[in-house]
Length: 166
Image 1: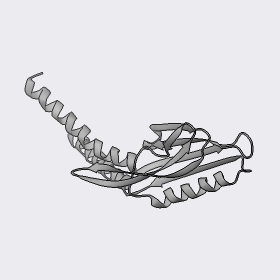
Image 2 (image 1 turned 180 degrees about the vertical axis):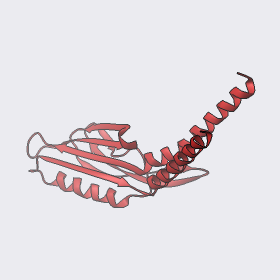
Image 3 (image 1 turned 180 degrees about the horizontal axis):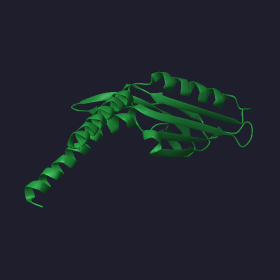
Image 4 (image 1 turned 135 degrees about the horizontal axis):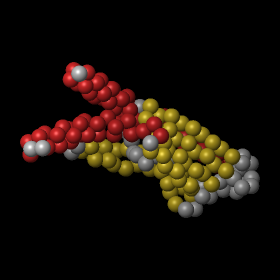
């Protein structure tokens, strides 16, 4: 194999992976499922809550246990996008073992699910006689739809190129 051929192949592979990185990143940010399950050993005790975050259609699965949860709230911060900073937020559970985010990403979209999650868990924390609580949430925002559209276009174009060579 000549140097020109190997360089050409390497360039094609890098371009292909570069093209896939954008839609996969958008799908990671835009389509996810959150599960929060809380359990009290006895009525009146502080609950232990498990946070489960599922992204990329189950390929990314993260579980976190927060013990003796006392509060829930927002964490705000800034993320860098190109040459500017963008404000974002996520929901956090505060327990005896620390403060843990419900999602690993900060976003400036999804305020409805964030406030809904905070209200439901806060309500459970105040109802000391409730033994267990479980909540599932599926987020499908603009980032995921854009990523899906780009991935579809790239896939169809790839199929076209393969068929054209046949």
